[in-house]
Image 1 (spheres, rainbow, N blue to C red):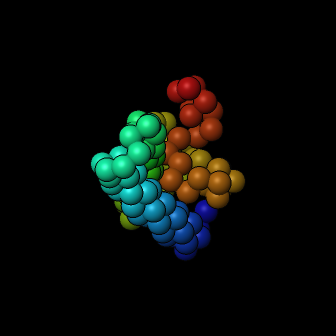
Image 2: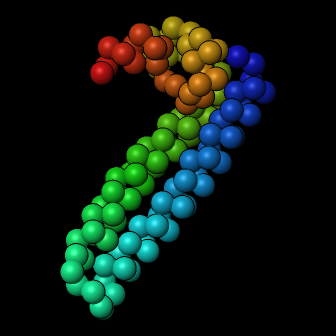
Length: 112
């Protein structure tokens, strides 16, 4: 994959993840605020459960953002598009689907 295309994909993925992260963080704050509001105490756990789910999503999104940052670093170092495990090339089709891919598909499947 050429460097320009890789940059475009990573830039788009970073923007997507940052947008989702901001939205989810805001939703989490709203859920926590709702759980602390006086009023109907019939089921305060539902707001707290939603906040917990939001926290899990925020964690996953932060991990995804870190993966994008690692990919951007590999691009700068000239190792983008190669497995961080074996050094084998990662096919362009995989990078198109997941621009932050760190492993070949076979390596990723072995980790599951």
